[in-house]
Image (cartoon, rainbow, N blue to C red; front, side, top):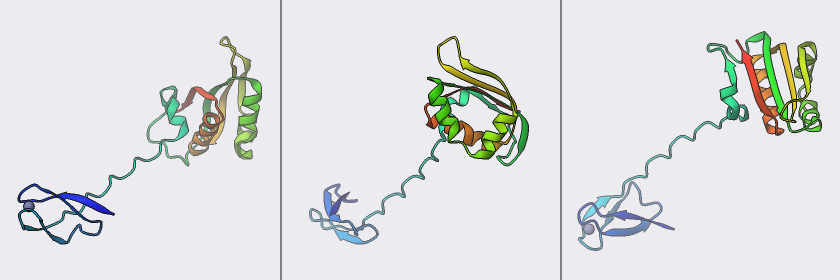
Length: 151
Ligand SMILES: [Zn+2]
């Protein structure tokens, strides 16, 4: 493999070996000797966005909370295309999250006006990290976040 580099003196394009950056080469056109510049370090990859962030506009998490902070007043509303996809998503949750949802106040569970299957809880006790994991699981399973308030 080779890379192309421009001569610093005459601008001619030279083909140089892959390992040439940092070493001297001689331009075939003008005989100038110059050091092949090292390629710029690739930019740091963007941290992968978590699935729940797709619905970030529906999620209110008061600033300043660490993921380990436990809240007992989380509010969640999710919508799924039907009951079976909701059951599938919730069935795969870690048991401590399922337990917290069962203990929470589930004030709505059923088809909504749009014909989707909606679930809503108040007063769920989880750490914020667990709450985010719950939202991720819902989104990965094809569910949508309708509203989440952690404050
Ligand atoms: Zn040259």
